[in-house]
Image (cartoon, rainbow, N blue to C red; front, side, top):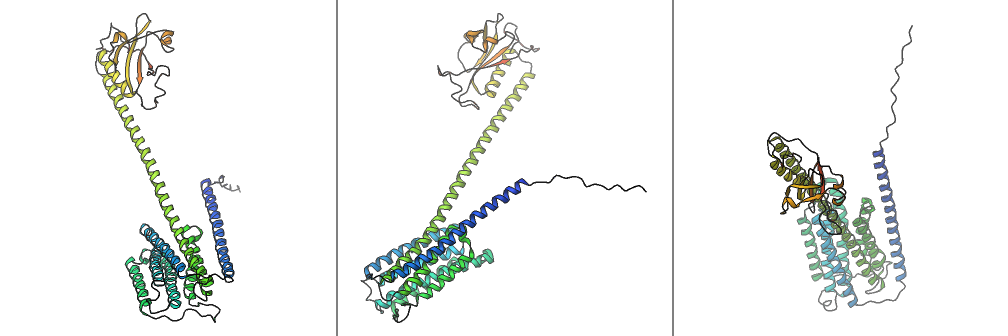
Length: 458
């Protein structure tokens, strides 16, 4: 029996997707850089927490004693910083609507009002006008702004999570947020103005002000949320928010909670650390604004370059169309029965348009081959009899090779014409236009041509 032939599979060369390999390599390099940046930032967070803890332990051994005046100045500075942070956050919110920016802006604006109120009611001019004495009024009014800010920071993460899950439907109305913030701020004002406050210091405990852990708990919850969000690995604003949460947590847990009397070292240090936390958020928002402006500027420059390229293309297309039309009209004119003068006039017009010349002369060799004599001209007022070029070395290298059986176009390029720069169209010695000399092959006369002396060269 004949053996069956086994069909061999066609040999195929391995296909290498070079473009895909490049994309994968680029993605891997970007991922590596992001991973390295995330590791560095995580190390920064740990280092910052350690530095603040060590500083807290060292400050407990000092004998510093502040004053009411110093406290008022620090709270005024904190008020201005919080006001700046809230304003920038809301401006950024109106360019990129997100729940996070909304709660940050509302939180810091409310904190600015509470810090300003705290600075006023605890100053030496007004501290005796309220139902609570300074040892109670100062700690509790401080704690009110801290709890308020900690809760709003936690809500900013919760609002982001809500928006992430529900999309645009998860966005919270600005009117609702502003109404709640305004109501809480007004309630705080009324509360401290009319309600007597209890004691705030507990020297018998390990922590002199244990109520500070309420704000510290919300700062910790917000920190955990933002760390799990993981946007801090690549986003500068989120990175600085995480730094602010760490600093705010340390201010409550490691500084103010270990204060045992007004204006002691831990009391003043906590106020300084609080302002540092405000400054961190402000830095992140300013970096975000800078990135926004830089991106807008880059987009504007790219748009300008695109418009310029489009304008150049339009100009070139328009010029090419004009040249095509001129050549088409010239081809139609050639087919007509015209005399030599009419043909020369059409040739001058076409040459001036197509070659972009200001002045064009048509020269014909004389019977003796000594001169190139102008038989038609445009762009000059000189008579044709005086426009001639000697044939030979004295007329230039081009004229030295001329034959009396050919005609020539002598043209002066227009300044600024396509492909002609001012340096290329001027003689260095005289500053006069350098003529273009174009040889025209002889042509036989048409049936209706009338020439100069019966010659039909053109």
